[in-house]
Length: 115
Image (cartoon, rainbow, N blue to C red):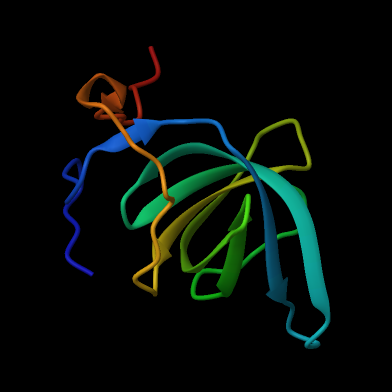
């Protein structure tokens, strides 16, 4: 994975999509949870509304409509004051979201400094 701080290989596209995620925990129990995307790229996503803690390196399957996409967790951030997490995912397959995206949807989202 070739990432640099402040640089992305692809721009994120702001898009809130309802998704269902599936994975297995350390005890090999099947976890199934509703969540939503916050933004996507052709080979990744940032999810919100995650209530079960995931670990970096976990493999997850994200279902959007009839599509099932395979991802690996690349970062996890707990949301302050909540019991929710945001999760960064990177694709491990050649699947696509199946969406037509216009250039006007593209936004280079970076964390803003706290003032």
